[in-house]
Length: 127
Image (tube, rainbow, N blue to C red; front, side, top):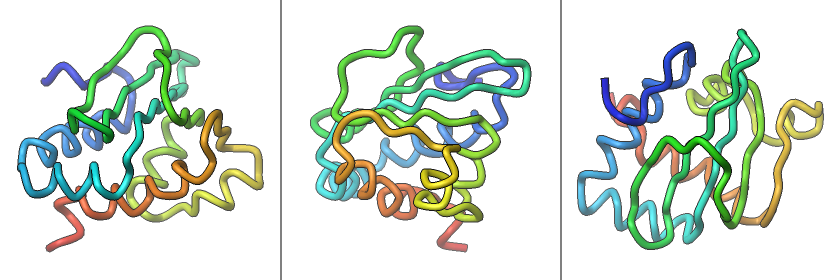
């Protein structure tokens, strides 16, 4: 279990995959070039517990689990299950947003770039 895993969150494996993918220098460079932002993903699980992750796709190319929400370019706020669907590509970010299931604070344009970055970093999509 890595330091990006949060107990009780279905999407923890997604953050582990991102963390692993960002260890690859060429993938890290692509992710930073594609996003150019600091992203905070704040999720609520089925038990009502909140957890946030900080994705630095501006300088470091890193993923960290954080207890409080730091300053960022964009923050995505949604339920754990909805984020899992979004990350797996079975949910559409715009539809989640329109239906009130995804809240975005900060730079809306940066938020739209994130979907492409997830696709690049997801090792499962290359199978």
